[in-house]
Image 1 (spheres, rainbow, N blue to C red):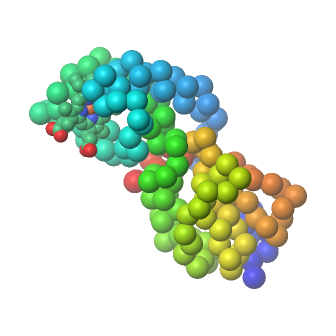
Image 2 (image 1 turned 30 degrees about the vertical axis):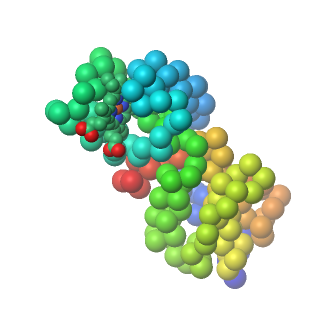
Length: 163
Ligand code: HEC
């Protein structure tokens, strides 16, 4: 049985390297996407990964000439927005986390929507990994006083995990 301390350690490991809150970036990305991308791609937000967007930008055959006008910061905001809604990208991160922290995130769990979070509950450690509004959270049922502990943005985790 994992102690709350073990869960805190995971939180510390996961939190390392994640710098600041990006709520403003998320809003900026939403506006930028509507302005620069939605005309061709529609407003039903696709769940493209950071890698897919980078590849599309770098693809010389791509008709997305408007992208060359965008700064790295703008593209980063757009990427954050596109990966903020959970679903596919959250699942990628959960799969990665299960593979990297098998002692804590076991047995592999199925994603579900619960109380506004999209996440997975691990019966052995009683940890829950969740995503909400573009942020990744950890909840430890053995240390419920701590509540949902923020670990940074989903976007920054996808970059960190190379997904
Ligand atoms: C002028 C129309 C147009 C605009 C504007 C545009 N795109 Fe595209 N985009 C396309 C087309 C067409 C393709 C398919 C290219 C291909 O597969 O050869 C594409 C492909 C992509 C892909 C690859 C999709 C995949 O499934 O691999 C991504 C990611 C993407 N666009 C993101 C963006 C983002 C982000 C923006 C805004 C910054 C944007 N696009 C703006 C037309 C556009």
